[in-house]
Image (cartoon, rainbow, N blue to C red; front, side, top):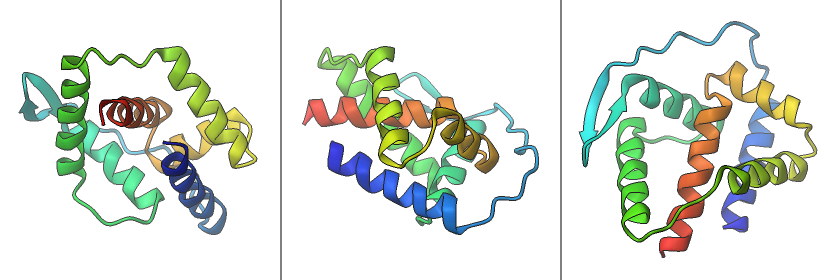
Length: 135
């Protein structure tokens, strides 16, 4: 888990420091339901945030499929009784910022400017933590 978060953190740090981020308001994301996975909606906004996250990491991938996979993993973790508290997610977010020599406000800024949002990244962290426990 730490290794994965470190890898993601390193990729985020490299992307944040080596790519100039144009300061502009992130695009307004629509919230239309694109998919329903086990009665859980995946919106076009969720997919747009994940696409921005993939771009920030310089990864290729299908943002829609990634959101479907994350939703399935969270549903399975819930079925297994795995719950990741907000405090656990906040602590991981703080560790992520610290390990990348960033203040929380800097990390928040990188997320917002890239179109990812802090809440989307925290849900990604929650899903990773839950899935690691499920395995």
